[in-house]
Length: 257
Ligand code: CA
Image (cartoon, rainbow, N blue to C red; front, side, top):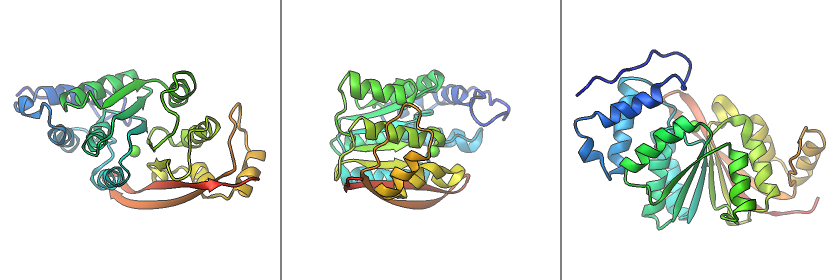
C-alpha cells in the first residue's frame, strides 16, 4: 500500500487533506471490498480521520441521532447545505435509500470538496440517490425551488455549511414558501460550537418577537416571514472536537402578526 501523503496541518481544512483523503481511500488494499458498501467507505474515511488528519465530519453520535430522525420521518427528499467530503451524504443518503426515499441533495460551494464527495459517493454505490450540486446554498436553493420547480415543499433539511448563513437561508426558505407545518423539519448542526446565535434566536422566537427582530435587522434583499410558529429543541453531543449541539426545529403552524 502506498503511503498517503499527509499534508502538514496548516489551517483547518482547505489545506489539501480532503484530496489526500481521496488518494488514501483509493490506494487502500481493500478498495475492491469498499465498492458498493456505504458503511465500509465511511469506516475508511474514519480511518483517515484517526490516523492522518482530522476531518470535520458529522461524527458517530450526531450521525446516529440524525439517521434515527430519517428512519422515523422517511422523507422522500433530504437537503444538505454544506456537503464537505461527502461523509454525511453517504451516511444519510444510505438511510434515505433504506427508508424508501428518492434523493439526498447535497449542496456544496467548494468544487474541490464536491469532487471529492462525488467520488466517495460513487464508491459507496449511492450515485442513484445522492446528488452533489456545486454552488452557494442560497443560489442553488433559489434555482431548484423558484426556477426549476424541483422542490415545492421541504421535508428535511440539514444545515451544516457556515453558521452565519443558517438564518439567511432559513429566511430564504420562508420567503420561497416551501416550509409547511407538520411536513418540514429543520436540522442545524454546530449550534453550540462554534454556535449560531442569530439562527437560534429566530427559531426560538414567537411571531411577535420575530417581527421585532426583522424591524431591527439588516435583512438586505431577503423577505423573512415572522408568521411561522416554530418549536425548537437543541440536542447536545460529545464530539471529537468538544461539546456540540444540533437544533431540531418543527414548524407548528402560522400566526398573523
Ligand atoms: Ca458540522
